[in-house]
Image 1 (cartoon, rainbow over the protein chains, first blue to last red):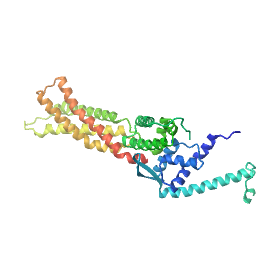
Image 2: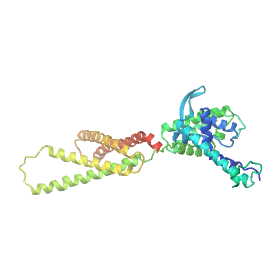
Image 3: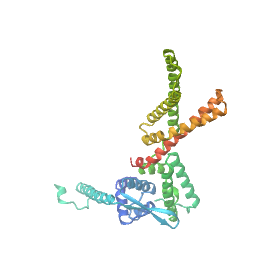
Image 4: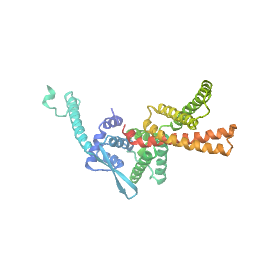
Length: 125
Length: 227
């Protein structure tokens, strides 16, 4: 069966806020640049139409802060950065993601769906 | 991300921004929030254009994009109820005024006149007191009707508080204008003259109630967007 890009996009959407916080924690930037950065990191299929509203939600939740930055091409642009609450959320969500993917990977390997994966001893118990 | 076949022009970007602005207006988003979204997206569209991306490729369906942006940011649509609230308050106040007039001057006054034989010395403040009481009744009932209409709507309390300040001032100015107009017409009771007098009172009251709603929504906007 051919890979389903929509399924991958759906999977990514659930963790997109974590990805955006991680990118912003490294480099404060604009909403459009985040789309470019996601692509550069191999997270494709997530468009500006998804990222921009999500940034609005993160800002409303207080996880992201914004400041104006002079723009050579027009009016000052808003640059997003991660707030202190955002950093705490990022740490928690990254751990959640790691635990979740680890469990799923173990399950898939144990059941033979991922034959070449290393399976921890406790998974066979 | 889909790559466009042709280079993005400034015209395409401006057209997309206008379409987004129209959509936000249709969603009744206040001007300040609208301007913020349009400016941000405009800058991102320009940045995308530098990479060869069209506004269509970035935004997709503008209506969907606007809806999602509004919802995610927690922006609050300005309710379309300013004139309805004013109409209900004026109707309530008007009915209270008419009923109060009938009660005081057409029922109680003749009744008391028949029951009591006064000695001809009447307090001058009497009629003024009755009319002041009538005005207060109309204002009270009008504001109560306004408050009940707005109950459960965004910024209801802020709007009613402002109406309580603005409405008496507007009513006083309107009554003064109506008295002046009546004086210029020799206090005629012809229907067109009375209608103009009513309009001179009702118009500033309606304007004050509209202003109170606008002001209340504007003042409460930050709290509403956090809700």
